[in-house]
Amino acid sequence: MKKGAWLRKAALFAAVIGTLGAVSKTVEASASEFIRGADISILSDMEKSGAKYYEDGISKDALEILKNNGVNYVRLRLWQDPYNSNGESYGAGTNDLETTVVLAKRAKNLGLKVLLDFHYSDFWVDPGKQNVPKAWQDLTFEEMNTALYDYTKNVLSEMKQLDVYPDMVQIGNELNSGMLWPYGKSWGEDGGEFDRLTTFLKSGVQAVRDTQPKTTPVMLHLADGGDTGAFTWWFDEITSRGVSFDLIGVSYYPYWHGSMNELQTNMNTISQRYGKEVIVVETAYGHTTANADTMPNAFGEAEAAAGGYEPTPSGQAEYLLDLADRIQAVPNDRGAGFFYWEPLWYNGNVSWATQAGMNYLGVQSTMGNEWDNQAMFDFAGNALPSLRAFKQAGAQTNLVKNASFESDGPTTSPSDWQTWFQQGTAEGTIKTEAGTFFGDYKLTFWQDQAYEASAYQNVSGISDGTYTLSAYVMSGGEFDTNQLYVKNYGGAELNTAVVKTSEWTKITIKDIPITTGACEIGVYSKASGNAWTNVDFVSLVKQKSKDYCD
Image (tube, rainbow, N blue to C red; front, side, top):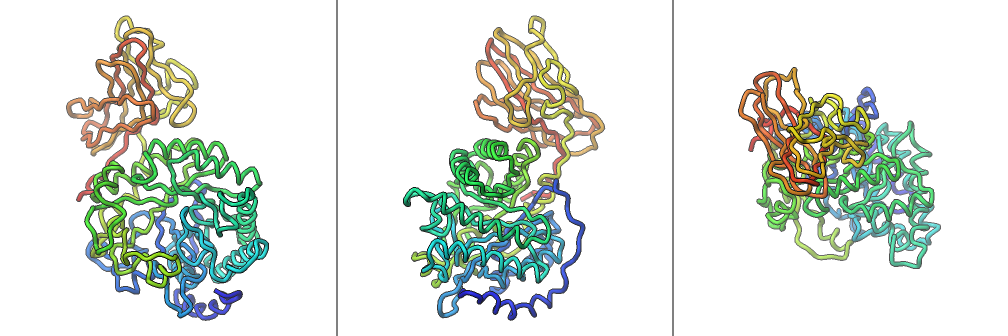
């Protein structure tokens, strides 16, 4: 878009915005509210293509359905000029300022918050491409930096005037390799890469600070959420140059970006290293391996095997709930939440790019949608039962007291837990010590001679229902038995083995039908000398399995 064109377009769509009515005034959520977000950038083009969205067989506004199921935030990408010289859209949402403002207005009218994602390009950007907008292609570095500030300020000023100022702003998208190539590329140039990149970032952040009607969090976002080295390399460079920001955004797709343990290690590390909250700002998982169109999907049998969850609505829900648990386990309450990427893109009627879009990117590929089976609606637009996981994610009540062994510091008698030792086993075999998955302390089993012992808790005041017990564990050495268990709940004892691993790993006992109002949970170990077990973040929560049936 040529300089000042966005102002001229503003006049054209102001009337459209007016037809949506004034933004509803809602009570501002507390800072501690867990973000359960969705990137809905595709919605306008989907609706133009004829897409309908259904909840319980009734056609509704897609955003209303999302809100009904627990979504409290939306993410909107912004492209500067996603059209060719003939005015043909690049597709995939046509996310120019006009489209973005209309979607933001709709979201805020429903009481949803808005994250605005500046791409600083006319179309898709990611670690493999960061194309300069057409209007900026002939600018010098200094001129481009000025243009970036002016553009960011103008967009945000316009949104403020229209009463849709975003509640959070993202400066750039998946910035591992920088932005606005080649000036802002983070590697492979002349050695001044991060100096130029941080100049761009500072200008974008300053535009937010200069326009915000109230304190507005700024996010910087990288891909490859399981790669701690990539994150510390990048953020060490930009923090050493004084870039101001508030949150770290992470893209994490479990079939591409490593294990949940690797994600956890990264989130824990960067939140502590930089003193920032962390958001998984892009994630998704397939509800099937089927395909709605002829374009090959990004998620298939191989990705389901790598991701570790069933490619069903139940598997999709289970993934999202486990992800929320991991985010909430980031120490010092620095796990802020997540955004599910494009849950509304359920068919191939809106292509990832039109021919004009592919020409802009300099590629030729199949038209269609590789994401349709990772939406949270089936191929006919019906809300999947997995969508209800948003309401539960981050909202489950853990019935275990002193679940992460933080109450007492180092001790052999952790509060709210009891210990049992077979005759001949030293009482110091079980203790809390530093070096944890969550917080400052963990529970440790170890002795230099054979031992048999357990740590357990009697949980009472439980309403009848079906529950899930889980814990994060590590162990090594030789065991006769080493297990997490639950008993005295109204049925036979249930247990699962503590896995031998040097990484924190979640183990789970599902479908516990508690009918007595109480149960005993614990870890029991019968081990050879020098065998060890670490336990942290023990959780007993009520299931809503009926919500996630296939």
